[in-house]
Image (cartoon, rainbow, N blue to C red; front, side):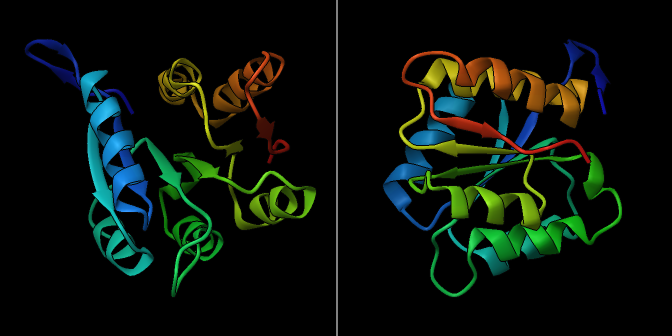
Length: 156
């Protein structure tokens, strides 16, 4: 969804969900500097409550959070109408094959292992307006770069 404004095209909207306040703050600050519109939450229930009334173009979700983990948040988001067009990106310290498989099962498009080079994250988010398949294709290309631990999730 591209929204035209008097000044041109509206910025990409991104929801970040991470219980680690410093990490969430750093990510959100960086995204805002790049011109994204950012909404941040530190837990799943608050993010899901917000998501009932708002539809971002991309979501960056930590997987390991107390109470409700990122996998459950992703599953619940995918159940709502309209969320099939939103790019869900797991942004986590888990890079093992089991975690990546669980991301696929939960409905994520991309599984990114922290730390992620800022430019790689920027490129990934810039592809959100082109659709989920474009985000996955971008992730596959970025994964070929040294120092980028990114796994694409199969086409759905």
